[in-house]
Image (cartoon, rainbow, N blue to C red; front, side):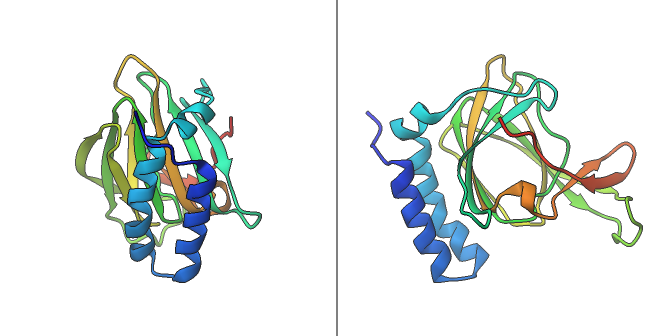
Length: 186
């Protein structure tokens, strides 16, 4: 039986961690084990709506967000065979697999960023994350996500700020473009 660790307990501890310092690396290090506990908790599983937007290929269910849009907690439901284009978050993030595998490709921006709307990316590596495994993301990290399975997959996302309130970008590798990106909430 998985340990009961509630969303409310997690939020309380997350607030304590975020208030104590501004060191993003330290925040991520301290949030990781708590996020793993929450991802395995029956309380989290009971809250998952498992709904996904067929146009964007995933669902974004906000579970908690502070009034100033900081400390956002969400569950993402990934449709089979779907994913995201390369993107950054504009904030720190901790992501934990809940159900099913997710393939993450990590990218590096190789242009100098001086030409508006233009970008060039280089593929760095690919990693499949399984339930319970953690991805720690600094604000500038670029990755893309895919669910290559035949079933819906779920992941828990904790962000320093809700991604729809950051300077977040989506990248098109073929067209070599970059543009702001917001997600559809489910």
